[in-house]
Length: 248
Image (cartoon, rainbow, N blue to C red; front, side, top):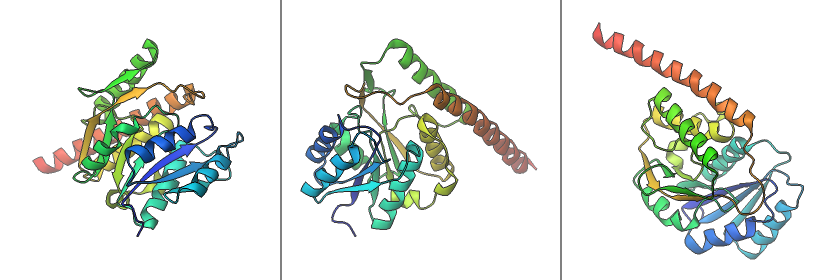
């Protein structure tokens, strides 16, 4: 068993400008948690920086992956490490400083009584800072669409700042999750809900990254719209079949 019960997973690809500050803030706000940096062979030296940070702090571990395989694959790899190492809680957190490290204590506390805890921008008390109006409209619209189509009562389905209990992760078929970006977060929420997970949200203030560049692309948004529609049709069909069976 690790000394800590919680691990904060930070995937990186070309995050050399922001990683050190993000790790420092994690260690300051959640000193009881370990850190797992998952680097996808960043050409800017992010992996080497992560190794230097780990050499100075035994609570930091680095996973080096040989290629850029995407956010979803990086988190799945981190989740497998969390389960194998015996952590109880695995937290997803961006390296770019957009996720507030000061919210980690609340996230960890809520994960003691819930299977999945989501740091929500769109519940009362949550907010975004520094976003262009069109980006926030796109995000809110995407969430509303996914929430309506899937019938899942979560205000921020696409949120990437979240905590999973590893007991839940062991129930999920992670090898079947191939989604990326926004879609990965929706997919994980969907399969968690289908597994009967206790899902809670806490409000956070999401801040636009100050260093580096966003990795959001049109293809990521297109993937989310296509997959969510398909999942929604499947879920509604399953609900209809279940209703018919109960009425017989």
